[in-house]
Image (cartoon, rainbow, N blue to C red):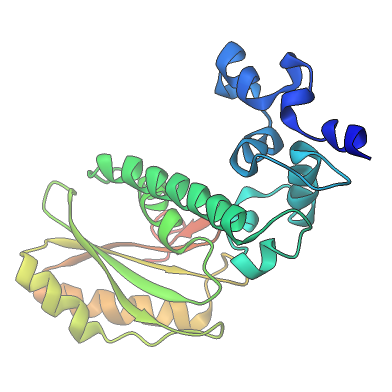
Length: 232
């Protein structure tokens, strides 16, 4: 029995097959997602090594790292060989990756296209299971002054108060704003209420000489821009 267990530990694999050694010798890009996760968890269980266990975890989320990032400690510990400490390690690593992407997006603070907005906001709201409405406040050079959440709702929608939007815009001396909200359903098609709300906020902005430059509906992998679609 002991000899069969040894085959499941990384130390007894061929050197080329060991994820840590592979990273050192060939670089991080040579490793699969399963191999990277295997380094995090270190060991598997009696039936499978760390890589095999990692592959099974990934298969459970259709090999989607964003879906893996949604799993809780309780979800992960259902896999034999994943205890609380390993689950926390996986969650921590994925959260750091998400924050790294967000920081990289924020390095480019000037908005030149709808895709720039998507890169800034997708890490924040793109994978949420509830709807959130955010505002990006810009100066006259289209550089981000501030971004903040305006409202948070359930799967069916969210309430937005345009007075709060422009109160903050005046405080920041913003000359333009961009509206953003997510659709947990995955559809990026604007609803009638989305269109009406955008018109309401745009009309209020016209009075204050604060332009509504765009409104993005954001999901995990795609978006719709009202400006690009001539809906403003």
